[in-house]
Figure: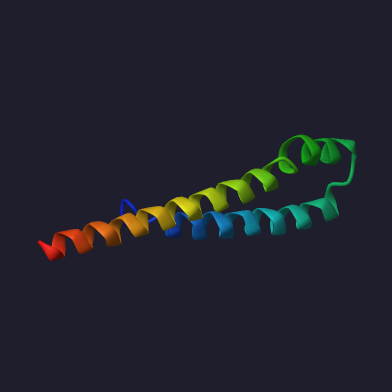
Length: 79
């Protein structure tokens, strides 16, 4: 992963979030009590919106960095 390449991190985070959802779905089949519901409400439910916002912001930042790289490359090549 290049130092300015955030796309790779976005892909990894997306895959990890999906894996967490899949494993949690399996876990809920075996663990069905108030502690599980509390854990989900207090810890897992807040993660989904945060991940969505983080992924959108990271993608936007990656787009900006890509544009800056292209702009700087064009300036350098024209000199």
